[in-house]
View 1: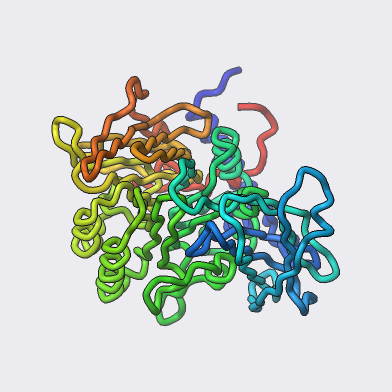
View 2: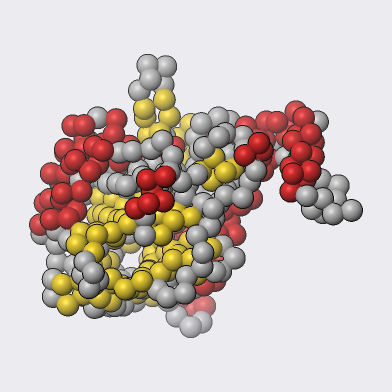
Length: 469
């Protein structure tokens, strides 16, 4: 007998009441790791290997990784890539630095190395050392010294169920744009609220897979990269600064989260909206720094990322401090794209004349993970494109005079798209034709865990059912 959505949902709720203790702990953690099991403890084998861009990505590259405490002399090896295996005899060894991190998974060491004096637009192979072991050989290509066309991928919030539900989004993005040069993450990579936070980081790296070690990752923090202490003060989780250690060209005391890099004619800038909203002085400090970075900007295109939206999409959310201190700077210097997260919906808004002339930036909010919120009445009126209940990834293709943007659902459907054409200082925006109808939440109101959410994401840790829905 075919079950309705309502009856299936009721059965899910009933089944959840019978969940085992282990499943309850698992739901609390937003991971696939039951509480009594170990899955992501550091070992002698290198893991969480990740490429971080430097200020000169044509000539240097930072790599971070993790081991247990047995690695006393962290090192990496690098060589020019060859078509055969003989490069191993021509590799050079580079010393790395280490710092210790204590988490629920025990004491671990985070290592960091920067390869320097590299040739532009050149492919290299590298590997990193473990405690008596080595990683596999991985490879990357340095950026060109000047402008060159390239593609990058942008993800909104992952946050929950990274291994279970976000992995397919990241994989589909890479299958769709396999030669992308960079992946941009707009905050809330993990939840960091309850349970084993380090397991959440382990699953985020699992979802990212080998791409993290072979494509540059440009990452900004979200509010879920912060935890609150007993004095209600918010602190950046230790994994963030250690795992993504690299660019430190922002203003003190925000150098772990505020930075920029120039990659093949695009200036990528990360701001810390969490710090800005917690302390107006930090909003002003970043605005002053942003003026300097944009006022001396040789790049053809400019992309800014931070977590909390300039123009909120979801119900009950608004960030006027950002509009007060940051938007005038972004508009003054004609930033092209502002890529955000936080609202667990999709939204795009920009200001443009009837002839398509673009004034200011194009502001975009997106979501990759399974937590889904509802859009506000205001956003439905003012957003040029909007979606609920939709996991997305975004592809951005850059040429000298054209920026092509596409937002695709995890099933491969083009949901939003536009092209910015640039001639001198003049920019025009043309939307893609034949876009699908606006996607709204279809979950019945009585089944929603919270009134303002389509999915809370805790629903997805229920035990497996004995039949196919």
